[in-house]
Each structure stands twice: as C-alpha cells, then as structure tokens.
Image: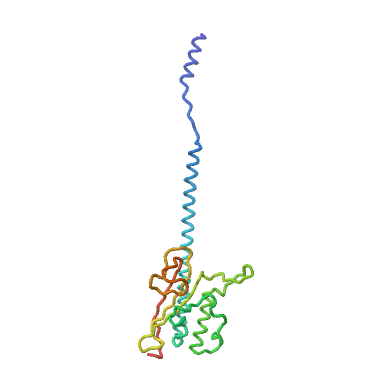
Length: 219
C-alpha cells in the first residue's frame, strides 16, 4: 500500500550512512609545504657546506705540495739557503703577488749558476707557482690566474746550528685566505707570513713544513 511504501522509503533514508568529508584543508597543505621547504633548505645547506669543506681540503693539499716543491729546491742547494730566506726574519718579505718583477739573469734552467744565483732563480720560479702564472684567463681586458689561491703568500725561515752556516732547521710557510670564517690559523704569539696581525683574521689558513737541512761541505 501507499503507507507501507512511504514507511519503507523513510527507513531507507534514515539508514543511509552519513557522508564522510574527504580531501585536504588549506591549512594542512600549507603546513606540508612548509615542512618540505625546510627540509629542502636543510639539504641545500648541507651540500653547500660539504662543497666548501671539499674545496678547503683541496687548497690545503695544494699548499702542502707547493711547500714541498720549495723545500726540495732548498735541499738541492743548501749553500744558497741564506738567499732563499724571505727577509731577515723570514716573515717580513713574503713571496707572492709578483714581488719579483722579472726572471733573474742568468736563467738557471738553461745556464750554469752559482748557489746564490740558483737560489734567486728558484725564488722566482716558486713565486710564479704561487701566483698561478702558468694558467691564466683574460677577463675584462685583464689577465688573471685561473688557479691561484686567494691571498697566497710564501715564507722561508732558516735557523743554523751552532757553529754552522748552511746546516740547520729550514721552514717553508704557505698562507692564504679560506672560503669561510673559522679561527685564525696563526694564534696569539704566532708568526704571520704577511697580512693582518696574529689572531685577528678568522679566514686565514697556514701550512708550515719543517725540515733539517744538511750542507755536506760542513760535515
């Protein structure tokens, strides 16, 4: 009958399951986006730090190699050690940034030289290495090195043994500017190879290699 049908329809409507809201609200989407953005920024920051650390490690490796290069030249020519020294203290006249304007004469790579002449020529060769003069590019009409390290300077010190002239401790120091601020490689009371005073430059890096030099003529 009509009444029974109406009752059945009402029961069906009453028994229908409630509607469920689905989807993501705007605030949830914004929070999710913010979390993702923070995560991406963190990953990018870590990559940048890793890249900087890798570059700093490469700079230190290059500095050690260049210091060894000069040390080997001094070992082959101990009689000229006084000429290798960069100033009276070894720190007051650092090499780097074209302090030697021209190649010394004679060129010991093609002519015979005395120990002092060879030392003078070795200083010039080493400064060319420090300045990266072998690999250059032209930018804005200026020729600049493509491989030099920022603010790279080199110093050589020598302390003779008692009663000796060319036998003693020789030190080769390489100093440059790093990519980020950490702490000054030269602490209070340390010796700087050019640049600001000790313990005042947080980007300064320094490598020191010591060796015992023997002049066989003094044995």
